[in-house]
Length: 537
Image (cartoon, rainbow, N blue to C red):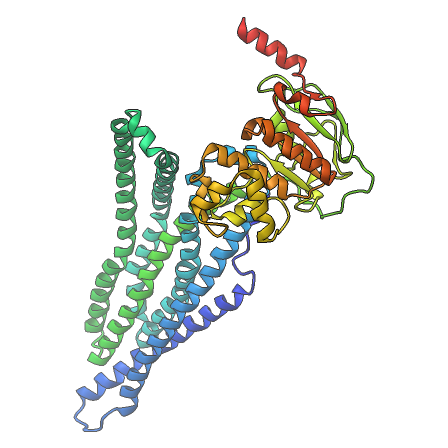
């Protein structure tokens, strides 16, 4: 399990300390404003012609100070929040790059992408606005009550009642608010996953007569999101509106106390000023509760993602000299009989076996894209596959990486080499990709996401070109999966022979004559054969 980054890590504690200082500064300006306002009102009630210059200056300076402090608080909070979101994004990305392909296949693409967008917005909002305003409220609300207490202790007592009730209600509404956040997030994630699956197949779905059905499903999901969003918005706005109700009740009570105690107008104005200063952080406190619940929902999803299985991380080592390219001793893959294999350096062998017996899974395991089983011995070039540096082992199959970008990068991705343009152009001609390069516009032309602007045969030739570029010590080629056969396969085998690259190639029976060595024949386990026979019966 990967550990999520601490909020105060990577010097973010400095930013959080700065937020505390800014909040204290706002509290001080509130106190100065309240007492300066009382002095000005007092001067207006007297017959003296002296103008309270100091009090007026204090009010003006306090206003400018609050402007600067709140502006700085917003910028510093956003910077700290973005730093935390970036740390989570990095941790999540590193964890998912260590997950085996089988674990990633169980996740829906849209829901996984939501971890990097919607959930990170909740994390950033909690640090940039939620935590920031919580710190500010914890300082400014007590400061405002201190002003009331200094003016008249009974003013603080009567104001504490309605404000305390509102704070309790805000806390109590947190649970249904959290449930509303979780419900809305779940519905949005399901819609994102469904659309990520369907949009690339849009025209095919239309031609299949699925448009009405898909629209009905989309409308149903949209209605569900609408209901969940309205409930969350209603609860959120209810929480945010409560401070206004508290301010009205507390203001009336404070004025009542002022009348009963025959306090001056200046004290009454100062009390109302202090109450007004309470309402602002109290509203923020309500917003904090909303953001805290959104953060808690996102945090639970993040912890679940970071708890998903991942492959071991080993220190990188160089291949052991004179060790065989592949050494398997009693390796047990699910549904297969134990596999024994010793493939020497520079030897090319074919893998054969019944359909769906696990040939592709074997190559994925040998290449380190799947976790090694606990039973049996597996060594690649004398060590664990995860300990080898990139480019040592070449994998060519349907799970090979393919990113949006230049044709140049698509050719070299996964080969461990940075070839010069003249070499790439020669390999393009050799692999039969000249027409593709001309159609796209050369090595700098863009290959679309998932290479969707390539035909099936161009996909195959692109894999062939990667094999011709590579100088790896071991190649694992799922030729049946990528459609590599005939002259293209013969060309790749000749390249491996010239480079003395050991290779294990999953290829159909008609290609057997192209291999000098006998094939590695995979057999289903006795339990698997028995299960299949019983199912057929």
